[in-house]
Length: 122
Ligand SMILES: [Zn+2]
Image (cartoon, rainbow, N blue to C red):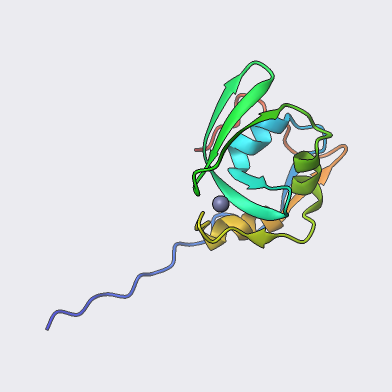
């Protein structure tokens, strides 16, 4: 009767709030967050982003594919910044730590990372 050790939750990497610049490049932000707020206010997980010029081909984990334009002022960009009430896509199965991280992300005019090239943690 082997005992299966209970999974120890990984230590939370970021409990502190993280700050990004309001003017952070939208695509970089998407690549970093890997989250996509749909028009219907459902938050999807991004499986892949393929950037071609000023457009990005996004594939979500629930296998939706669409093209977005690089705009800091787009609806989606504002969604990510303001975190309006959103549902979470169940098909995308976004891990809860990612949601928490998203919720603790703040945007500031004058403070925070602008996700320049050097910032590539993952
Ligand atoms: Zn989804």
